[in-house]
Image (tube, rainbow, N blue to C red; front, side):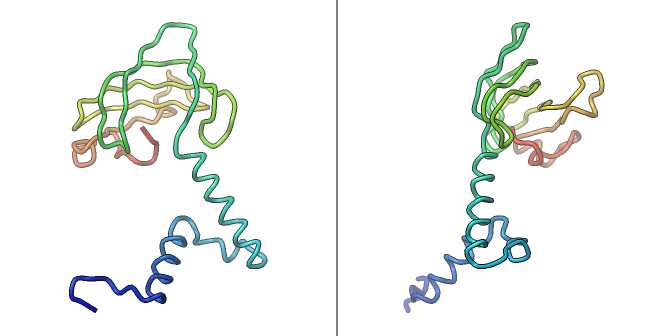
Amino acid sequence: MQPGRMASSPRTLAAMLLSVIALPGCTSLIERSRNPLHFVGLYLQDRAQDLMEVADVGVTASPEPGFAIYGAFASLTPVGVAYVDGRFFGLGSGSLGSTPFYLAAAGLLVWGYEEIGWQQFDLKDMSTVHCQDVGLAGIFLAPHGRPGPVPS
């Protein structure tokens, strides 16, 4: 094997592939499964659920006008402004349907602030709304909570 090159033996490749496949969320599969076939089915079901929770896709409607030109890829690059208080129709939070939705956000690429209400929240009680700083500055200087528990 040459220095600086990874070993390409079948055993090494199989171990790497198995570790990559097993990493995301497989900690309880052995206890939950009844047999090897059930293990595979549970794994695929968990990955399908993860895929459904990666993004929310739908339309938001509100009785009063709102405005949103905002995005924050992985909570690291917040850009734009948004104020929406209405109802979300589509695939969101892993289910298909309709839910109350609130977003107030502003971002300047390195720092941003978000207030997100999803499903059950009360704007008169801000403890029911998730508030977070986002962006690189938000990770290090976050007085309102770090990005991550709620996607941007």
